[in-house]
Amino acid sequence: MSLFRTELDQLRAAGYEFEQTWQVVDLFEQKIAGFFGAPYAVATDCCTHALELSLRLLNCFQLEVDIPLHTYMSVPMMMDKINHSWRFKNIAWSDQYLLDPLPVIDAARTWKLDSYVPGHLMCLSFQFKKHLPIGRGGIILTDSLDQYNQLQKMVRDGRDRKILWETDDVDTAGYHYYMTPEDAARGIMLFDQLHNVAATRTWSWQDYKPLNQLSVFKTQQIF
Image 1: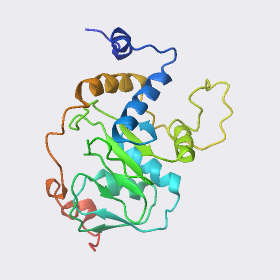
Image 2: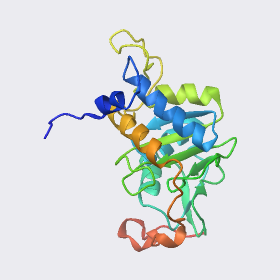
Image 3: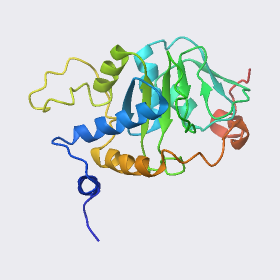
Image 4: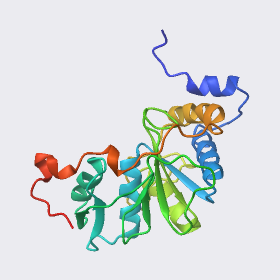
């Protein structure tokens, strides 16, 4: 058994050509953006960090955001981490939900052709239970070139992905939330196999227990 990851070699064996490993991440982003019908995509290491970067980009921390009572626990935990105002709301959602009133969509469970919602930051997941089971990973879809350029720096410590870090004069605060080229290569190969396969089911609020049952959230009011 190899001690090293072989996805980049597998991708070359499948006929893909690239000179720099960041180009593999770009290619994965382009495939996902094209499938969902979004102009741009920025890959991350997970969907929760995709949501976090979207909220940091919008910089509306004092604006209270509605979080469904029935969702995955990392969403409100992330909101607390970045000191963003939020509240639980009993929302009956299917497939995806809006972090109302912000133009941010948690679409972790969504796999549907041309389903991008214009004007929104739409966040996807590639965790092992999702339709494209990379194991770990997320993406932010956007139709704003300015948002795309900002997020590309934010996701990798403020760096320009095309410049070696030793020579890059970083002028933007960023976060260590990038998708690795190996995960992107795995994502490309899985996409080529699965993009035309329909999602096996639609997820909804009913698939998640109410988060106020957890001790960490027992004191939260529900609206």
